[in-house]
Figure 1 (cartoon, rainbow, N blue to C red):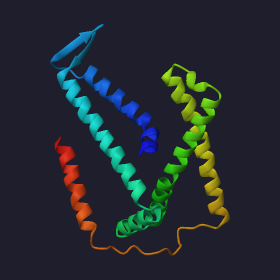
Figure 2: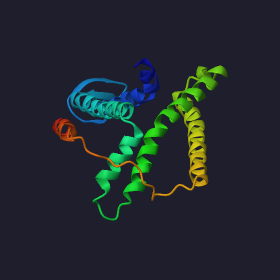
Figure 3: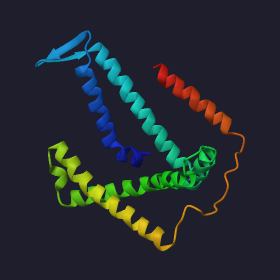
Length: 191
């Protein structure tokens, strides 16, 4: 749990910036003002609501990706998209499962880059924008190199979309999760 919170600290920082921007930009009843910046009651409410929605989306994604195997996601997406015309269900399914598989790899690479920066005393940099930029660019480079390596490995193994994989067989409990997601989505839309 603590390692997950450590990995999402930048997302929490982004949520704070979203909250602050909403609190300062939205017009309404002024609660207090300083140096020409006014924080409004409506801005605070809207900032809390938008930040909370983003936080719920992030938490849902983390729970989903940590409790579901990428192969199960691939099979379910392929099964779901099979009746839809003009959509290559096998290709879409493998893209989604690989994207989910890459999340832990990207987080580990971010941790390695952060450790390397700390070893070089780069964490003493005061400017948060420079800190983020100097973390993101090497992370993007490593991510693209890893993706290129996976593409080369798949091509060397003659990967194609016409493989026969295990078929997704619904268990019958999907209706409960579908109902829960519709209720949760309706509740969030109502807010």
